[in-house]
Image (cartoon, rainbow over all chains, first blue to last red; front, side, top):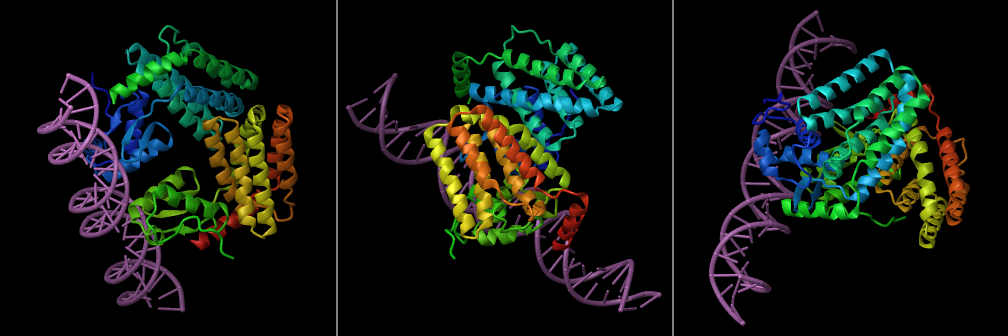
Length: 232
Length: 232
DNA sequence: GAGCACAAAATTGTATACAAAATTATTTAC
DNA sequence: GTAAATAATTTTGTATACAATTTTGTGCTC
């Protein structure tokens, strides 16, 4: 099954494009937390020198998608349970307010775009591509932040969503049903109705649901960080 | 008047240290918004190659202290009035809640540290070093975020405080009195009393005061961006 | 075989060389 | 003299070379 290529390897590429490509791979869970990202390897893959790979890695490190330790290189981040809680608490603080602002400003074109997003998400799920579905689900949130027209906060949310993808990769409980479908749809409806209160409330409860669908017990964390250590 | 040297130039230095040094200079308003930051020049100053200077600049660009435009190099950022509003709106969203958490957790040692901060701030003002006073005033806010023990949100606040320094350099109304003294002191008192409601409320009104002490009218913005264009 | 010392390999950190682009200076036309 | 065109200079972008560090592998002792 050939996916549309997002960045042709073996071709010269800019550091931003490389950061984007790696970021996407992490989002879609094609690269697991803890995976080592060697500079030579990446340089080979993208057909550039290590100089530009290093720039890309620094960008990713900044948004905490990867860890860079001096003289030790880069590896995909694997957030602790503490970090996981923090990320979702931050989202619960920022996003409901943002959804409210978005409800105030959403245009019909915005609503259409969000609905298309949801459709793509369903299509990805139907095509058994849960990684892509997850990525699109994240984009849904950043899209709402964009509609709210608060670039600064939107930037924060973007990094939080990115980190959430890692957290979900590590701590998601398979038992809990993926009921995002309804939540996202209801949210779009509230935005379309310009119902600020409801948008804020729906976003809040949606995030709380996500947060509580994670298994953030300490025991679990230890197991995972062990696996992590082994997979290095 | 020799200030204690924070980073000896002409000596080999790490990229983080260089980013820190430049950041401090910007915070203390020793470098004005719009100033060009040439790679060769910085490499010469810090006695390293452009490679490490570029890494430092990328870090600073990430927290929006500087602008990097492709093939055009780096210059100290000069936020628009829109960005200025956004930054303070974000702070008004994040910091009151953070102050509340800090009130819940503040230890006597924390209180002592904050009081020392305020003293340093006064000392700097007394020594006619308003740049340093401003920097310390910013550190006061990041310190509270640290006490709240939410590293993720603290990181956001840190970048917002950094950008605020630029905004103040550009838009501060000299007419408005610098009455931070009381605000910070009252806040420390609330934290010491573990009075969460009051801490939250004081932080909110302190930020609103700061925000409204800026002259963010369009006319003003145009003037400044012109000066900016000229100083390039 | 376990543990340690040392050697070899691989990987990252930094400086430098060269290419590409933008900026500045100079020439030329009017 | 002004303005456009072009040449010279400066500055940034990228690749490569070498140094420093970490990691891996080997042989030794017990």
